[in-house]
Length: 282
Ligand code: COA
Image 1: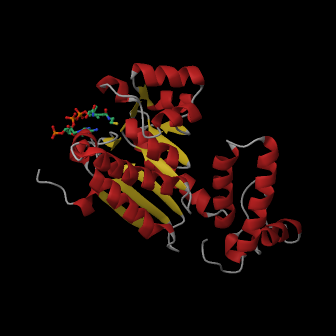
Image 2 (image 1 turned 120 degrees about the horizontal axis):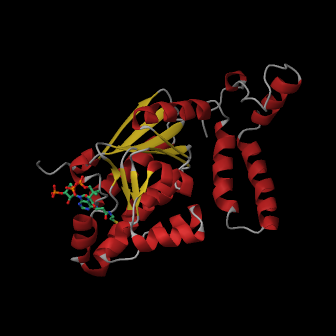
């Protein structure tokens, strides 16, 4: 196949409040090349503050979610340009992963297939992750002679227990979808035929939640992991107060619909956002 244009390395569409973003180099198992990394940042930028986007789902075209970093274009060709080339390529990748970790909207990794090495950066960057039972997860770096860099070692020590992380990193053996779910790499593994449906359901539920509260919540989960209890307690007070200032109506409406209107129960579902004074998704 002729060389894919840089613009086409990422595909996206917006439907019903959900941005469906796809790694789109199926002929290279969606390996992350410098041009894909640059294009992904542009796409994330374009979608982040759109009012018609409430959730972003990241999946892959073809058999792979992403087979990690592109060994030819990301590693070998960058190295040919010396340290400057290596650092440039690293920054391009790490920048979009970081953008995704702190994205304004909730994010879901929909892992449809191969998920190796450098895939763990975006996997961890997504708030939630669902995979197909026949997806394969692996830190393959050890198999070609390097350590799992680009944050991948940090990802497995964050998501898995110590012994599991050590085994996963040292042995370079793959986990199936159900094994990845049991290890904590993803929330759930489902048969491939049900993956889109399950992710649709989760999107639908997220779209009904207060978007300011969602952003405050997802950031809080990531932040408090590295804090002492005292610092976390303080951070959460400040984060809620900041959210209140962005969305003064939200909690008032949530309490009113429960306490006065008796139209819903917070223990059983979300309040009706449509009754809240219209506000741009923030
Ligand atoms: N970097 C660069 N090219 C890659 C790639 C990667 N990470 N993963 C796949 N490709 C390319 C192959 O070189 C091949 O290119 P070609 O058609 O020009 O020869 C093409 O994608 C198809 O790959 P192939 O190995 O034939 O597909 P497969 O379905 O038999 O196997 C994998 C799929 C994912 C198991 C296998 O491609 C693989 O092991 N990839 C490397 C995974 C890895 O170590 N990633 C970590 C990087 S940090």
